[in-house]
Amino acid sequence: MKIYGDSISGNCLKVKWTADFLGRPYEWIETDVLKKESRTPQFLALNPAGQVPAVILDDGRPLAQSNAIILHLAEGSSLIPADAYERARMFEWLFWEQYSHEPYVAVARFQVAYLGKPVAELEPRLVERGEAALARMEQALSDSAFLAGERVSLADVALVAYTRVSHEGGFDLGKYPAVRRWVGAVEAALNIA
Amino acid sequence: MKIYGDSISGNCLKVKWTADFLGRPYEWIETDVLKKESRTPQFLALNPAGQVPAVILDDGRPLAQSNAIILHLAEGSSLIPADAYERARMFEWLFWEQYSHEPYVAVARFQVAYLGKPVAELEPRLVERGEAALARMEQALSDSAFLAGERVSLADVALVAYTRVSHEGGFDLGKYPAVRRWVGAVEAALNIA
Image (cartoon, rainbow over all chains, first blue to last red; front, side, top):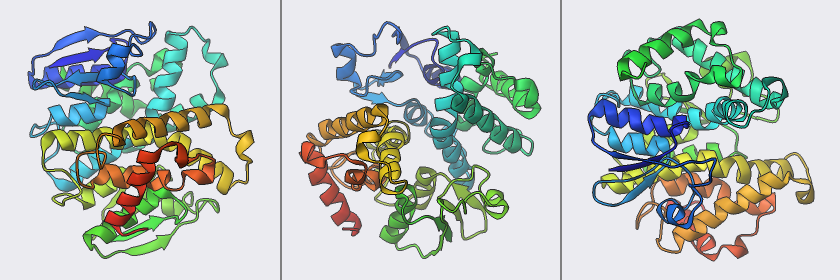
């Protein structure tokens, strides 16, 4: 398997961590988004959406979208709950992550850490919705060790990616103690601390 | 099963169409987003994210996120491809829909059709990214009858929801003939035309 990814991207690291956790061998092909390496004709032939991560599976077929890739890699493993309801909850978090977390927490961090924008100049909507996302996680993690039950799942892999670096976008996990505890637990479970 | 949904929301209709296609009985509880009925304390107890659709399953447990709900309902049915790669492609489209299609095509339509904003006053970013999403679908559907293979799947259920009403947000499917053909085919397959 070849993984085309940018090491600064949480979406790309999700794929790396899942492959590492599962012991799946791969070749990592660093693809610099800031240098528009995901917009070259060669890359667009692999993923017409022009986004990293994208993978070429062992049989040569391409696949994109971080959460779709980790679902494919993890089929049949402990990272996908065997119980149908816990699995549904995992999916709930995976879709919530892409719609209600990544566009705020990850985008704020990208603008601050990689484009050099001061935190004070972030769009207020980014900050408000990012805080709302972290508060939603705090509520869920006050009741539960992990997001979709009592052991680590792809929901945790997906959500930890940008939550663990949210301070780089000006968010303070000190306000979210259950989230901070959970970040440590997920990093330990995935051996990425 | 109880489905809390707003009939003007494509995300909610996805759940209705999937339940109808599978012959799953349900009670539809109309929940008016414009009247903030998804923000009442009662609703937030059901779905802390304050979003429709949300369902209460037959065993009384809640579930949110349109694509997570339809995945749960459709487990073991023809709406989820049996082939692992086609299933991965279906997931790719489901995540792409929530990240790269719904925030533009659905939001433009909501602003025009429900908030009364003239098409000419839409944020240019909404229009550009909506057109890019439709162009991406046109490319995919020029090669394939449905999004994840040669029969209808949840990828089509999810993407058709806002694509079929995209003209209400000022988009012209006349520019995307393969998409227009596909909308008719999916409506016929789901019996929603």
